[in-house]
Image 1 (cartoon, rainbow, N blue to C red):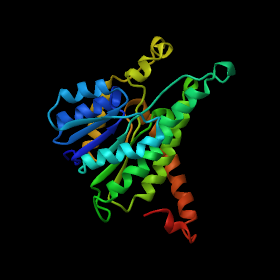
Image 2 (cartoon, one colour; image 1 turned 120 degrees about the vertical axis):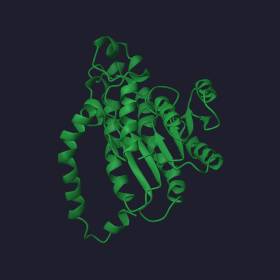
Image 3 (cartoon, one colour; image 1 turned 90 degrees about the horizontal axis):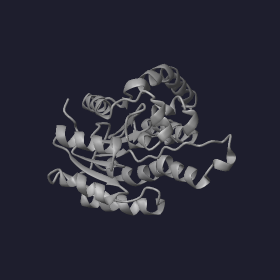
Length: 270
């Protein structure tokens, strides 16, 4: 089926997956795109390549106190936004066996961008997305970008892996809470992809780990988005998700069903 959304807000689109996804949406559909990121010059250069369907807003996801205002400005300027993709992310190495090398400021920044900013984004865009429809007909979407490392962590990037595991757990609960609303919950879980995220890590680059080419990854994501899939895990991430989630999903359902007679159970979801 054709891509169903009219205007997509991509948070974290100055490079890598976010930029490639925004490009693919513009090239393969009639949808508009709003891209965001910290590097304004890159955003300007991106928008300049396209027609009026592309626009941008520069802001920093580490500044949590500014997220509400920035998102409200974007939605006011683009009230037809019906899909939000949270792609902003930082991946760093951390060595707890050498505590003197652990930079707590860097860890907190990674946690803020990869997880806490997701919570802020959900809080401040969901009122708009929910206002676009009634009932269970899905006409809006929130897409989380997690990682294959949410399932199997990477030793050198323990904090990154933990943040993505946290978002992955959040997907379960938010998807259930919004199941009877108009908002679709989508999870995109990349494997190792050749992007600036890993290119900046010299040790990872030199290790010659098998990384999925960016164009192949985006082609798989686009195919699954058009097919209406809500869990998109290309490459090796798909293998990991299939093995683990086939066990985890029934356990999640089992816990939820076990407590469904509790008086507070209905309040936990729409």
